[in-house]
Image (cartoon, rainbow, N blue to C red; front, side, top):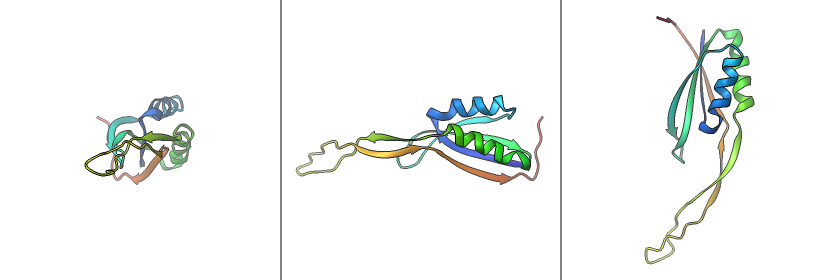
Length: 107
C-alpha cells in the first residue's frame, strides 16, 4: 500500500478532491501554509494500492494548475521610504510524495 501526499494550491483543492471521489478514491484534505509566499495550500492524503498510484497522480496533475500572481514587495529607496513594487511569481501546480505504508487500519 502507498500513501500519496499532494501539496496543491487551495484554488485547485475542490476540483482535485471531487475528481478523486468521482474516480472512487477516498481522500483527506488538510489546510496547510508554506513556501516563500506563505500562501494557503492544501495537502491531500490518499491511500491506495501500488497499481492505482499513477491514476491518482494523473487526476492531481489534471486539476492542479500553475498560474502567475502579482505580489507586493517593498524595497527601501532612502530615508525609510518603501514604495510598493509588485512582482510576478509562479504559484500553483502540485508537489507529490509517494510513501510506502507499512501498516494501514481503518477503525
